[in-house]
Length: 197
Image 1 (tube, rainbow, N blue to C red):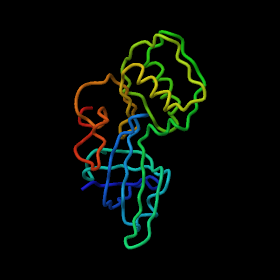
Image 2 (image 1 turned 180 degrees about the vertical axis):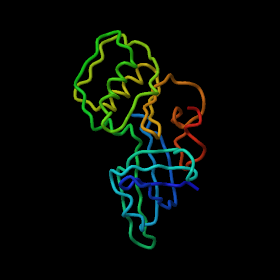
Image 3 (image 1 turned 45 degrees about the vertical axis):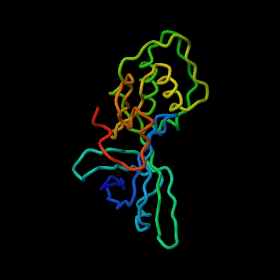
Image 4 (image 1 turned 90 degrees about the vertical axis):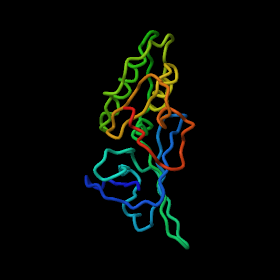
């Protein structure tokens, strides 16, 4: 059974969940966690709070991110549903207006963009060297998340963030991990998606 924790003023509060689904939004590389819980937990599930999902209390998180939407349902069974997005979603709040000359290595662009999110606690230790981009790269009034996604697509690299807010930018590889294979968008959470890192 998945254990879900919500960070309330620095204290991790456990929420009993009935259903948990993890999926990768392939368009922009953001992982999403959908959960359903009893409505008694509604006071813990507030937009903007950080969450972690774990297989057991003492294990590393298999997902960590921020609550983006909360919906409550009254009726025969009172439920609350929440949509959580991983820490890449913080890059949606940053708007870019910049350009890079031809021959700029892709990882240098990613490093500069990731540095803009340092106020959110995001780091870039997992950024690996990437090829140079042959043409000029221009970002005009787009989110930093879309800019990161563009660089990842142009270099054929993967982009993700681990539960500790460290951005990973690395060459695509073969294998069947939800982090690199969109066909694995799942209806239930199983396995450790971070086992390859």
